[in-house]
Length: 297
Image (cartoon, rainbow, N blue to C red; front, side, top):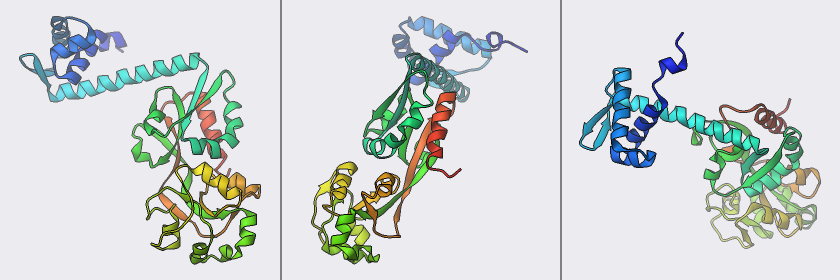
């Protein structure tokens, strides 16, 4: 069996070819790699000779990929990308950091009650919570686990396992229900005559009161751009709110809020725990612990 050294061309030649394929220009590739253009050209010629394949079609300084060249460029890009990501992960591990990323409301409402499940498995380092409203931050190389709302096809190349559905239903405090007992009647019209708390959302969204009630009329009450402040107002007894099922379980268990209807509405998307395809043993343990916290054994 051939060794890797014997069966693969020189790394420098592959790097020069990938840069040229990506930039479409020998000069631009040379500037990126900080070497002479003649060196880039020589690397690619040696690579083509080693493989006995035409990889580029040259037109002056500009180049275009042959079919073989496009296939090889993609393979090199994937391979070098895997090496880069692995090095980043090893370096982060060396800094004793285990990064979990998600939105602020989800971290506070769902993850923090389970934070001991995370720290109990990260025995040789600290846990860092990365909260962001920018979903691109969840794919940063230092992120071990992210919790996202959407669907798996939105995250190609990653592993997504569902935590819970995007399910909504109305809630209020026990004191508020005593003042407005008709809210437990399962009649959406009962909500027309009580103070309501609104989350900023399109009129036809399932987390919009007008959509839930089935009315186009304007409904009074404060509007919140964030979920948690709205829930604080609901717990304080100042209105009824539409709540995420996965976010509200502790408040329901503690009796701070009560569910007002047996029915609920579900979003087409759901909440997922997202990891890379290749994970460390610690990442696997933390992910499984979080999944088990919502999945019956």
